[in-house]
Image 1: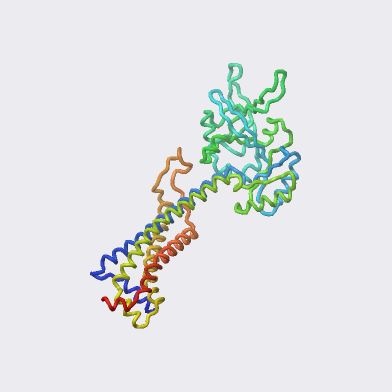
Image 2: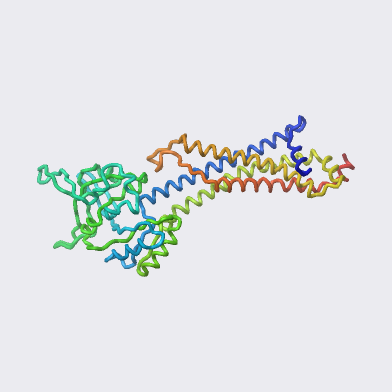
Length: 420
């Protein structure tokens, strides 16, 4: 070991008369550890929230949506086949999207109809995983429902649809109950436009955990949606699932090249751009703000090194008179500050890993589900987050040593020997 490092380690050892300086060094080390630990835990929690929200969104929204500038897509079978054969695409299915109003005997609510092919219901979006009641396999098939017709109880056969949990609760319906679907795109009649009304049976209720989806979405078979809207063999667009969700933007451009004009594709990042930009900005702000804790601890490192320089003026003068260069003297104090910062960073990273693992396993913090979309704090541990925090901490601690080390290096041995 070089002599500069040996002297730096010796200065770290506490003596009785230097206890106060050593106490400041320990405080600086603990400050770095607390800052690093807090920052890593917060980043793990923020990453967990972001990924959990992304998974919930992608569970009910396709990764890519293909639409046409011309409006409805007719003779869509060849287009769907071309999308399915595009490299990177796992599955593709036609869909219909429109706004409707739902009514029951006691309530009314607005909703968004998603007409899908029952055989390909789970190819693009993961609906069956979140099914709470009923069956998704019977979507679009007739179901016997008891209803009152002309004051008498009768049993009728109604095609099945699936509702979100919050929407079903708002309407006061359960599996097996009838629901009226009203389209604002009416049909012409002798007295003007007449709204289209059709009765369906609730065949399933899903719970995605996201209020915005559970309170607005109603799944209907593609054939029922086409017949109800009277649009014939036409669709709104094509929903796509890709192999790598992070390559969705490149695959969307590839699909546009395959289909050509007037088709255009939007990936999930573009559709939810504002939401994920807000998450990234929030993580960056948390990183900067919590990094200030490490910066405060770095000021303690500066204070520690300045005190050591003042106490070791005679030692420095002797070393320089023996031939030590300014660089060698400065290295002693840079090394001491780096050791304090490294020990604090390592302790902080270990504490952050332990804290994140405990939060992930034991769920100490419970969240109200009526306010948040999760019942506990989600945690995701990624090595790159911990490495980034550790590097930032070490960089701050090393920079904090520059001023004290420079002052020690510039110390004149003649002045010290003359007055002391």
